[in-house]
Image (cartoon, rainbow, N blue to C red; front, side):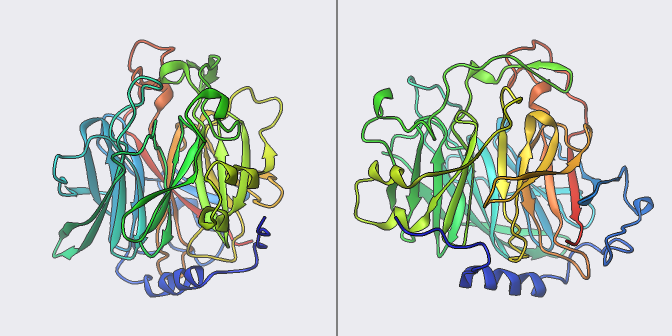
Length: 402
């Protein structure tokens, strides 16, 4: 097995990201007074809360039935509205919604996850429909959009499309970009990871020998049942009473990290494993356990996790701890956890994360989109009425210096 590289080793892609971060400190939101220091004045931040590790504030309010997915650059933010098949464009300077990304041919079906993959390019994962495990499989698509400022608005066009048609995928609810047009896309139902090549071809990364239950990887497959748990004072039962498999995935320094809600643990394996000549089901032998969830937690959903691409020396994974209404950071070597921010309004079922370029002396903000899944009967089978608290909130998190 290829050795796991230490977190202090950086790839050329990561160094490039650091350079881009420096170049991107123009033409974006004005830095908050005092942001050069750890002591950001709460008076300058609407509804701000301070913790030991960060200062968090109310930042934007996307207009959606249930928003999901967030990414951004120096000028714009992109927020998905999957139920009605839209990707909204917001001004980064003030969070105002100004436009939508142009619809692709056939229109968006379920645009759920969005990531910035270059200073002026964003990738949207359209999941292709809601999952129905064992009945109807999804047909995901990745759309890449190139964009630029056009006066007071945005000019954007569809630059690349990657179809997964013909490959058996139960539900893809996350992806990570490898650079050079390549991606990893996990399947939260059948418990597999697919690789997108630079030419747009789809190849199996870690995929079971068959999709029979006997061949499933316990570290990755979904759980067909879920107990009712309490979230924010409400009973919560995820749609279909299931617990997803691979819910979050991230790559750094030649290592792939993923979290499985069903297996209730953080895992890793060498990225190089996906490029060797072995059958894809044998590559699962390289999966290593980093740490399991705390024993006292019955069910845990870490819905998205990211490294800070603008600070390669920051070793931590930042994750949305949805059911606990908070933001965590995890040491990818030991699995040790710390609470970065914990506020029931600013982190009201956090579901999507996105670092955006730094401005001036301010660190790269981490934007956290909460979509209140526990308050909507579309995503919570344990309730019958919509009790969402409008507006939905994008929270801006400024991490303190270590």
